[in-house]
Length: 109
Image 1 (cartoon, rainbow, N blue to C red):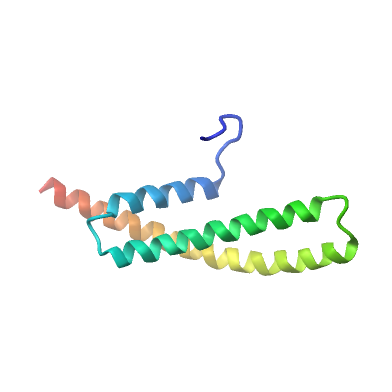
Image 2 (cartoon, rainbow, N blue to C red):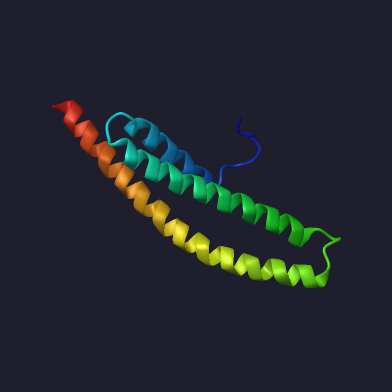
């Protein structure tokens, strides 16, 4: 359940949009295509979770300086992966919209 006091992030909105689009395509596109998109979303959510855990450790006052440097390096690598994932999510979003538009056109006929 969404907390009404915490506004949704761009990530939340993009993930929700992708999931709704994916649910709408089940049964209308090959299952392999749905599975590939779902796998991509799972990887993105997993990456997001790891990122949150790293930030929690980084901000923890008991984390020593050496560990903070390690975390910062991992974060740098994560940011590069996030950039790649963002491009992939945008590609999937465009593809989802195209499929939804095509489905709507077919239904309108």
